[in-house]
Length: 389
Image 1 (cartoon, rainbow, N blue to C red):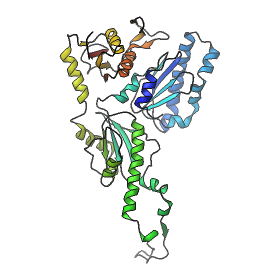
Image 2 (image 1 turned 90 degrees about the horizontal axis):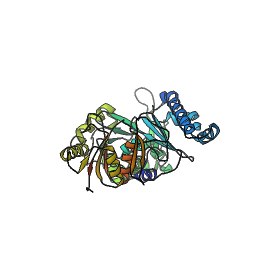
Image 3 (image 1 turned 90 degrees about the vertical axis):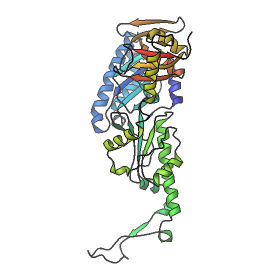
Image 4 (image 1 turned 180 degrees about the vertical axis):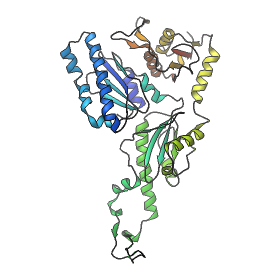
């Protein structure tokens, strides 16, 4: 799948099965990815094989178990159509493949739960936004942040208005000939278009444009799933107004980038998007950090990982701040309410930060992934509580 909806994420959150494999890797789109992407994936499969054998599986069983994943290595078309990151989740049946519009560190984990923290970023409201560049000539969707834009693949979308109309109504097909027009000064005959009634009815043309916008809107809504990150449209009328009428995505912003989309480079699109979204970008994240800072030293906050894991499990956490690209290995035993922490990763370990994030997501807590500089405390997690027990 190109992305996941909130409902699909919820199903992954509740997954519990021995020998569940989670593989993450950064990827390159297009031809450069044909060589590097499968090499990285094959290397991570090797790590997975070693961990399965350390867990007691013999080599023959490991080979059979990993066969559906090994088959991905030779699928060249799959590796060519990538974005910035890839998640592959597998537990003995059909692998779940999620294309990510951001980089992720290489990681392979075997556990009874899937490692899902990299996917949670899709549902954070901390500065991520989208820009839809829409014209009759092109349709392009970008994901952005304060650093730049990266193009996102849209499933089953017409690449242009012309492509859409080719499959819309065969009666609209115009005939082209050069045999009846007067010659120009260059001596060549001018092209003459003719069809039913001698022209294209404006009402019919508007209907077709509305259908085009509806098809694009459907693809965008499918691609963004249950997210609520801001979506800006770069377009001009009439497409701008027609798209708004067709839109079903909850995060569509009122303020457009009112320019001819084809005339704007990704760099200029990014600059216009930052200007339009300046009042809202990072607002939720800043407020969460400020709230935690106000509550430091009180019973309504904690920077202790073990306490925060138990609090997320109990549904006590209102907001959870997690340090980016950081892992703490061990095991959480919810029945005994105990936590093992290991200095180095052992076979069957889980990332305790992932456990905190997954439990928080399952209980509807707000989650923000922060850099080292953004974290308000020198710790892996920081939490504020809905209630104190």
